[in-house]
Length: 135
Image (cartoon, rainbow, N blue to C red; front, side):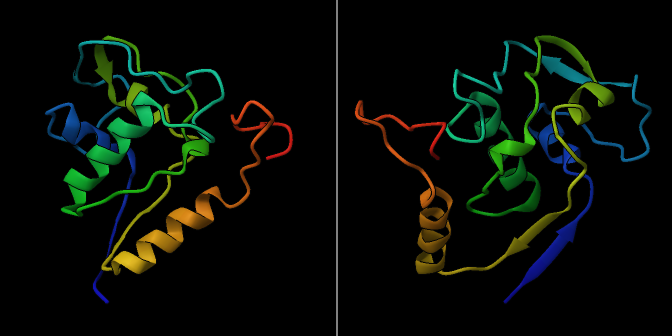
């Protein structure tokens, strides 16, 4: 199984902003421009539903790592990415912590198992939407 460990999760999202990430950049260094609000939360929160920021982050991680698929822990995303010129600190601040990115070759069956586990604790309410209190 091929594995690659890359540091600094925020560097990955910079790829999607068409920036050249510099790991030693100062927090106030402008790294790119965001054209529109990238939402972290659409009502329930990134931890239990798909969000724009989760999608952008997963796409950026896949692009940065060369992976076909990227999975992001939505609970690690903590704020929107506002439109306008963004600094290194702005990008880094969207993540709860500075986690390490791990890349591995897995089978389709393993990917399915990971996704099934990710939703295994979700409980649907009578309206067939996720019950956030019981999940």
